Length: 458
Image (cartoon, rainbow, N blue to C red; front, side):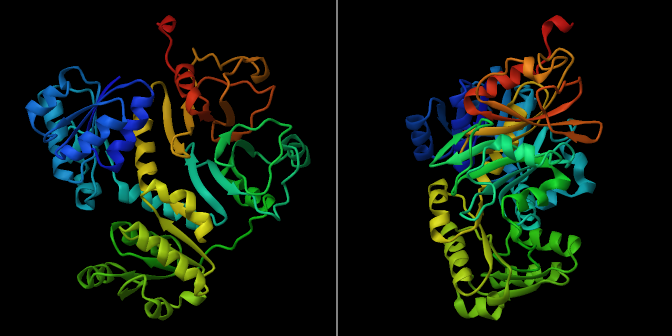
């Protein structure tokens, strides 16, 4: 696939890295010579210095032969104009744009991005995507990662196995025997900085992070089985009143009437503006690193500190300080991937990576075949994929035990007619079933092939 990426920042670099690793033909455009130099030196891509909306720059980058155009610069208007040029002059089939300003995304303006007006096929709003991720973490305490699939009926939860975890040192097959009615499957394990797919005889050990696929109504029970029975946070302090902080506070007001929320915002004008948009949330003006202000926000009695400023260091320090002052748990927004390895040692319970969220959304549309959703984990080491089975799929019609599934993939759940089904050896996949699969990066291409329409079908 020939892909042009407009924007070589953290998100653009991350997308280029993933696509280049999969042998796609990738070109990257950015106005910064330094960013282009870096991406040329470190990745197997072509780099072009220039404005991504200028026709001559797009032509030099190979727009006439491109299959996909991804605009992820910092500026919405550049992304939208670049997609328009990519469509009008070069007829690039698929155009994806990152759009941050919520005014463009109001429901009554949705016709703006139609093919007749601004022809953008996929719009990614990082604020909404990250805000929803934060809300899922708040709603499911005890999980370090939460993703929903199959019309919200299936969930993948990442669960840390602590020393007192009841299921450690027990073969996974024994867990299935002990809880036959629990539709939960451990599809992956992160141990000592290595991700692998466990076998039925394998055991979890303290310090592991288990990736578990289960039905939505069994998430709490599954967490309880792993020893995580944390109560839902009812007193929340949010550090940072930007677009994500405001989105989370608004959603909490709308969804959870019992939750008491306080926001700490550093900029006075912004604090006044968001106070006017919120009904029950208390807005405090000042720094999330101000200990006196944290105490004024009753951080010592809070259930959760959510640090959502634009500064990773502020988010990390505010989260650590909140726990030191008595807050029960914390959740930090961390952009820089180099910080992720240190979060646990610093005392951060969970973190959200905006870049990973955005890259996952892009991959959903890069993947060939009937791919409905993709979530990238552990910096692209593996993906959780939701795919729809076709009549021509090699998965259809035979018991799973008779299929020669490639190494590096594990079926986690089958969603059929509104019901989540835990797969076993005798399970038969039917056409139109939606299959939730854990796939290592080495097996992603094979998963794609399984869900593509075969030429023999026509």
